[in-house]
Amino acid sequence: MDEETSLSERMLRAIIVQMVEAGTIPAELIADASEYASDKGDGDAAHALGCIFLETQAPSQSEWMAEQRRSQMRSIDGGKVDE
Image (cartoon, helix red, strand yellow):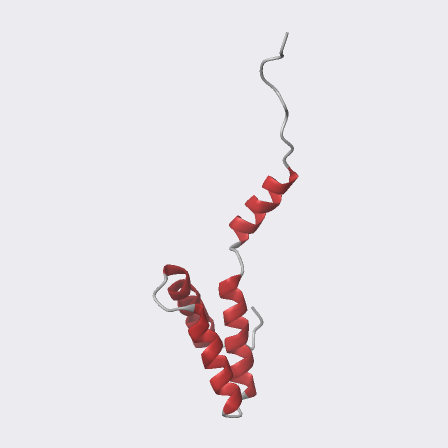
């Protein structure tokens, strides 16, 4: 994260992402909050909430890496040979 992001903003982002992943709050609530902030004229908050929403939709780094590795695997057709 860049140095301009305050500690409280980084903490809030982490808490929100974990709450969405745990199912405590629906991700759509974050999208709605972003839209609400935009409607109220707070573009910065709307943008930050939109970024958090996108972050909640993305797989974790480990999940992404595992999926990349799975996609590179090729099955080997082995086993018994018909005689």
